[in-house]
Image (cartoon, rainbow, N blue to C red; front, side, top):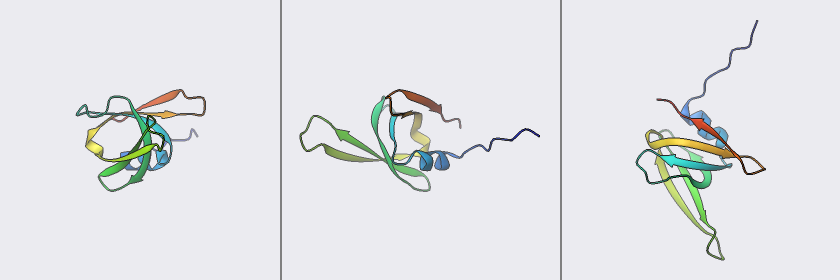
Amino acid sequence: MPEVKKSLTIKELLAKLSGRKVELTTLDGRFKKETGFIKDVFEDFFTFVTIDEKFADREVTRHWIPFSNIGTISEYNKKGSGEKIEIER
């Protein structure tokens, strides 16, 4: 019998991506291919951390993004190429 794949909720997907480098696009246009890390995942939102490489001390900025505002997330692998994961509503 073929194995059935379990579909993930947005919260489960973000939890799997937590700590990994991703590229995020938001529906409201605030982020257009912004690179950062998913830090914490809560019930309806998550913390997205961006690092400004221009500064010597690498300034960190935290953003709180509601699940409903996610457009596209691309995960970066070790070679630097991303795999797009579209989230359907």
